[in-house]
Amino acid sequence: MPDEFLAFPSRWRIALILLGSLGFVAIAAWMVGAFGTPPASDRYAPAVVAAIGWAGIAFFGLCAAVAVRRLFARGVELRIDGRGIHWTRWSDETIPWREITDVTVWRYRGQRTIILHLRNPSLYPGRGVLGMTARANRSLTGGDIGISLNAMDRSFDEAMAAIERLRD
Image (cartoon, rainbow, N blue to C red; front, side, top):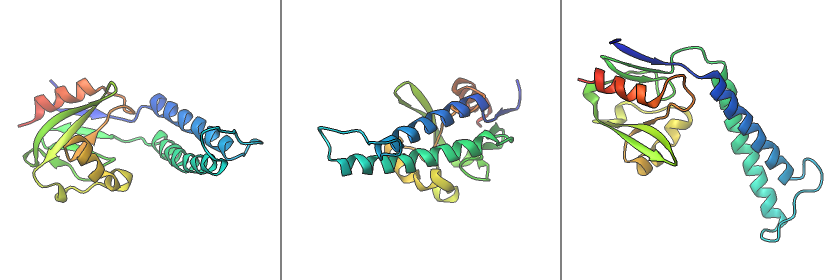
C-alpha cells in the first residue's frame, strides 16, 4: 500500500470545462447583441435579457480564466498522506489529521464531494474564490472544506480509500 495519495490536474477534463465556459460566454454575448440582434423574449424585457447576458459573460468568463490557469498547472493538486490533507486550491498548508474531526460525503446530482469537518476552521482559511465562498459552502454541505476531484486525474473513490487508509 502506498503511503501517500497524489492527484494532479486532468488536462482533458479542464479542457472540457474551458470549452463549456467559452460556449456559455458565446451564448451570453449573443444575449447582449454581440452577434447582431439579441434574442427576443416573451417573458423578459430586453433589458433583463441583456443584464442576464452581461452577468453570464462575467461569470463564465471568470470560469474560463480559472480553467486556463488550471490547464497549465503542473504540480500536485491534492496530497493525502500520514500528515494530513493538502489541497493546493484551498491553501498552502497541510491540514493535519488531528484537526480533521470528520470526513463526510456530500452528493448533488450524481457528483460526490469530500467534506472535511475541522476542529478549528479559522486556523485553515481558504484563499481565492474558494475562500470567499467558504461560508456558503458550510451552509450548503454542513462541513468546512469541500474537495471535488472532478478536474483531477484520480477518482473520488481512490481519494476516499486513501483517507480511510491514512487517517489516524
